[in-house]
Every structure is written in structure tokens, then in C-alpha cells.
Length: 480
Image (cartoon, rainbow, N blue to C red):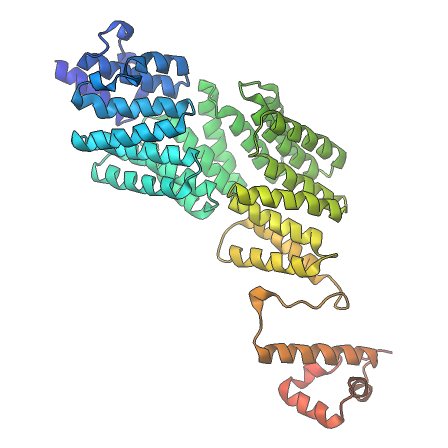
């Protein structure tokens, strides 16, 4: 009977049945002998449930006997105890200690031949590396965990690992890979009983869908996620409201977007300033979409104040981006350039690849009249990096920049893009066409006068026709 009781919770864990696990947890687990084999198992379960419920104090109570006394734990349970001690440090922002403890958990699991805990420890190392901004290491850990979960035939854990990997791809701007990976995670998690993890996957995949220019699908995913987060009053609820508002702006449902922003700004969680900074920045986008420039200015100033109050640099790049967009719409390109250069610097420092591309395209728009050479280089770089990618919104901004550059009069500038450097023969032919067209224009369509302006003989013109088709050498319409 004891063996069955010990086995059932682990089986339920592998199905994501945390509601049933919570019902199984003895109410008297606090009073069990701290280092008894069965008591340790129940305490670890209590810590896991507390972590999911975001109850940090309860998590500490469950793990307190082991945080500094892992040596007293039976050898067979040491890997899992170390794993959850690492989780505790991770939840309390002690990231270096969390990573060290997770590595010890992996080593202990290898020694104890505990393959299940070994895979979970590797995944946890990836999550900690993600929090530390060590993206390559995080990706490597998640790939390794996915491989192990596949070998162990653990579909629920495999879904969680794909969720982590998809979130990493999304953070790195690998939006297409993030979308594919997160859809795989959703497919696996939908077969489990963990609605909370499934909601997180839907929240993140909605972000990638918005970046890919699919707000209709993103909106449906966010509504499913919202239903789950509202039941639990999750920490992700504010982010979901903000993402819904941003999605509805793309769908031009401005009234409903404003409703979700009101909810987000009326809520006051422990880290309200950080969430409100994001909300005010999205509110500014709402006003920009309605060309309410004064209201957008006010919202961006409030966003900037909240971000500085929270001492959080993460939203500042997007705030500066929106300030730059506002100045462009107000036809104040010099100020737009100043804001957009700041946004670009912060986006590059934060490895926000998609935001960096968008800012470069906006910066090209701001520079095209006064500094067309730099604008051409920026647009060419963005177009090269977007080639073969499905980032519709960024492509739209880049196309607008290209349109502005193409609208410049040929009298103003003559630019060869490094990204599309022609062959010498092509460059020569292009230059001849340009010179002939200019001369024809000045000669009001007279080929003889055009030849005189160029200082060449009719014989040279006849030779020129052998290089360039005759119709390209002639004026399409004589000037009167």
C-alpha cells in the first residue's frame, strides 16, 4: 500500500494533474518528520504546488529543513531535493546559486541513476540561463532536455521543454522557429491536465503571431489564456491584458483595446510600475493609431516615468521607438532621429532583434531627407535581413522607408547601396542611361542638342545605341 501511495503522486505529476495532487497532499505535512523518506516526498510536492500558486512563503516553509542540510537527506532523494532547492533560489532571484544547485542536482541524479530528475535539472539550468540572458546556453540545455524527455517517453515534460525553447526563440527574434516550437508545445500540453502551462504557451505563441502579422489568430489564443489566468489571478494576467490591447490595435478595434488597457492600469500588483510602463506605451500606440498626438505624448511621458520608477530598462527601447514614431508623424525628423538612435542602442544592448530591425527602418524614414546615404544603408540592411522571413509588420515599415527614399528627386542624391553593389559593366550602363536621360531633359527631347550638351559626336551616340537599347536612349515625350 505504501508503494502505491508513493507511486501515485509521481504518476500524476507526469500527467500535469496538479489539482488531484493538491487533494492528495496531507494537511498535516508540516508536522511530519522532516527527514523521513515519505515526509520529504510530501514536502517536495508542497513546495511544487506553492511555486505554481506563487506562494513564496509556503515554498520556503516546505523546503527550509533542506536548504542548508541536504547532506541529511537519503541518497535516493538527494537529486530531487537539490532540484527543488534550486527552484527556490530561482524563484527568489538568487540566480547564480540556483544554477550551481541545479548543476549539483544533475550530477547527483547521474550518480543515483535518476534519469527523470536529471532531465528536469537540465531543463531548470536552461530556465536559469534564460533569466541570466545566456541565450545560447539556455537553448543548448532545452535541446538536451527535449532529447532526454523523448527517450523517456514523457510527453507532458516534453511539452514544457518545448515551451521553454519556444520562449527562448521568441526572445531572440527567431519568430518563425518560436511559432513552430510553441505550436508543438501546445499540442502536447493540450493532452495533459495542466491548463496553467497551456495558457502560458498560448500567451507566448500569441506574441510570435502578432510579430508575424497574424493578429486574428493571436487574439483567439489570448482569449483562451485570459480565461485561465483570470481564474487563478496569475502574475501573467497583466501581461495578457496588455497583449490583448496591442492585438486589438492591430485589428483596429480601438474601443475594446482601451477597455483592456483600463483593466491593466487599474490593477496594482506588487510590481505595478513595471506593468504600467508597458500599458502606457501600448496606450500611446492606441492614440497614434487614431492620430491623437497630444494624448500619445502624455501616455509616453507616463510610460517613461513608470519605467524609471521601476528601474526597469526593458520597456525603454519600445518607449523611445514610439516617441520616434510620434515625432515622424508630427514631421519633426530631427527629434525622431534622436529618439530612434536611443531606441536602437537599447535594442541592440538587449538583443531585441525584431525591435532592432523595426527601429532601423523607422530611423531610415527619419534620415531620408537630410542623410539619404545612411538611410539607404539602413534600408538595404533591413531588407537583406528580412529576406525570406515572414515579419509582416517590420516589412511594412521597411517598405515605407524604401518608398520615401524612392520619392527623393534624382537631383538630390545618387546612391549605390553596398548591399546591392552592381558589376562594373552594369554601373557603367546605368550611368550612361542617367547621363543621357538628363541631357535629353535639358535639350527638351532633341537628341542632337543632347549630344552637344554631353560633348560627344553623333558617332559616339550611334555606338552607345549598341550598348543600350535604342528605346531607352530616346525621350518618351519631347519637351515643348
